[in-house]
Image (cartoon, rainbow, N blue to C red):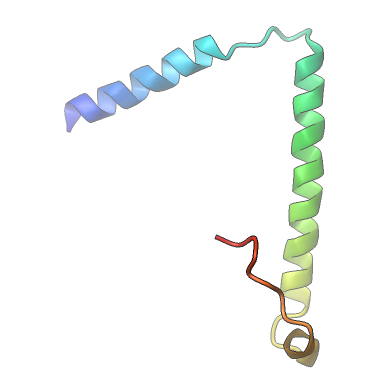
Length: 69
């Protein structure tokens, strides 16, 4: 068990160093924009899910589970 925990920390450390991107790089801005766009879509779907929970419109227009895991 201890070896698994140590290897987990070691893997995380190596990935942090291996994927390091300097602070002044355009990839950081691109990565933030992608995260914010995905968050906007996710919050929109979550709002629709909560807003229609238990209402008749939910039975008429069910939310498909096509992209849910």
